[in-house]
Amino acid sequence: MIEKLRIYVSRVLGVLLLLVILFSSSYWESTMPAVSVVLFVLGAVLVGIASLGRLWCSVYIAGYKTDRLIALGPYSMCRNPLYFFSLLGALGVGLATETLVVPIVIVVAFAIYYPLVIKSEEAGLKKIHTEAFDKYCQRVPRFFPKLSYLKEPEEYIVKPVIFKRHMFDALWFIWILGILELIEGLHDLNILPTFLILY
Image 1 (cartoon, rainbow, N blue to C red):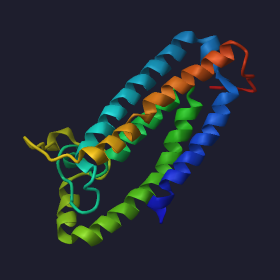
Image 2 (image 1 turned 90 degrees about the vertical axis):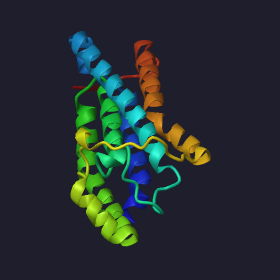
Image 3 (image 1 turned 60 degrees about the horizontal axis):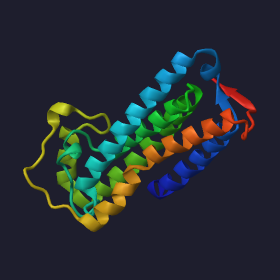
């Protein structure tokens, strides 16, 4: 139930944040432009890492989500790499707003909701994979990747039709950066009004 609500909750939060961003501007942009630039660049770097990471996860998981216990590639370093990279991407988008408030809201929302989603999904995987999943949990961290655990095969069968669909999902963080720049341009042209100044 919780994991089914994940997409809905994420979209609702995204729309609410978008409405705030549409009618607000960054305190740092007008008072300390260097801080504003650093926040955007850091956000863009995190979005790039997140997009590549989500693509990497999709190579392994696309088409195999429940019928096979994936423990290779990013899934050998942590049990939830897709959510880890999603957090990096969401944090990157937040920083790209050139504020500190938006990324803090995103991280807090993630920290409150996603542990419940992960716990629920892991309970489902335990029912399917039983002892194999227990052993996997004992050796692989739940959320934060451990690079020294990385195991990748020489070859891996990818399901291209399903991967293609996942590929577009992996890149939406990059599209949001473009939307944020468009919104900033509309503010600069005084097409969009500013009702809030966000720190």
